Image (cartoon, rainbow, N blue to C red; front, top):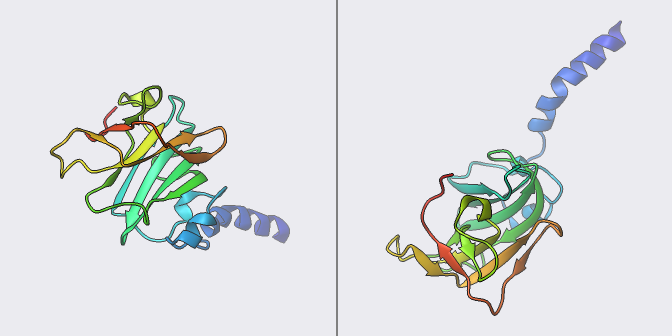
Length: 168
């Protein structure tokens, strides 16, 4: 009987133990260790974050988090509104310039787009001059490769971004 009680106690408390487990620091080394793990193991709160689903079945998403000058974009599988399994990490901290922000409604002549089903396929760093420009050219951009689970830098192609809000 005591074995059953111990097993039931373990099963009841295991999810809480996992949720309260080791937190991953919001640093470059911490990001690298997140591949294959849940993004919600990142320690702390994130005053700036945004995510968009990449498909209608909501099996993949890109999610951006920012805190203390550190800016990172994650490619997630099995996403929820704020969590998901990390497939790839793009640390924008050393790349971003003052006034720029990560944009998820970017496109080339043949991929990405500004409609809901195409958001997040191409992401870019762009400066919309404090909200005065809706469409801007991305200074740097990446293709989101779900199959190979990575961000691929786009070079030699014009990438435009729509910097308006996100509502589906």
